[in-house]
Image 1 (cartoon, each protein chain N blue to C red):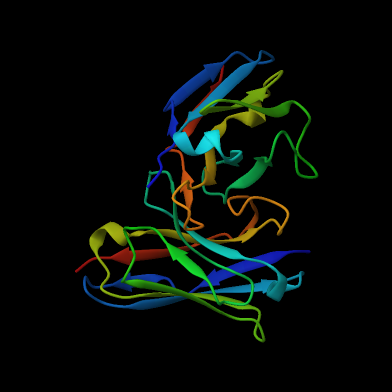
Image 2: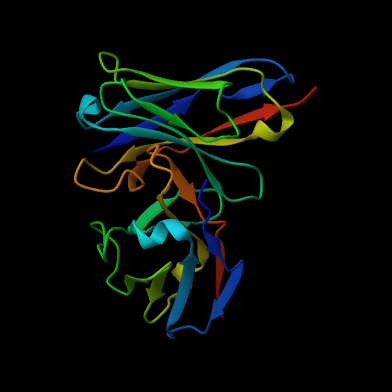
Length: 122
Length: 109
């Protein structure tokens, strides 16, 4: 069974940093691209970042570019999101999601974690 | 970057057919995927590609596309289909980015 379990969320002050983790199991993690998607309270889904299967290629939404860094450790089956210079508008539930497979569009996310809440507030 | 536009809210009578649409320039080049999200839950993929359903998704869900518009159709809507629905697609910027629509709240009357 495919499982994605996020952790690392919490309360952080504006300007602070936080690192999210997403532990993957039930599939060959090193074969799949991964995404981070966030959802502010009461708002819609917003794509944040993606990383290819070996970690050599990444992309970011303009709103986080230069502040967030996506990475992965295939030996540990874990995806990360390092978030620096956090702002109030970064407050959201952060989901990790698996790209369906190399034959599908990069936008198709077939498995999602339950999310971890990040609150940026003083 | 690209944008995808969805109607904020749509309603349907129980057992009737409803279409939820998603518009954007990226849809001229890339298929939309559709996700269902119920309160307090993670999104669930319901349609991807030309018109593909993941295992476990009822066949009352279908997808289509024309020009810059993608559609999710629910034929014979059930009470359990009441949820938020989001489209997404690959961004047309060429940077392997992704864009989501703003979401549509579906109410089943």
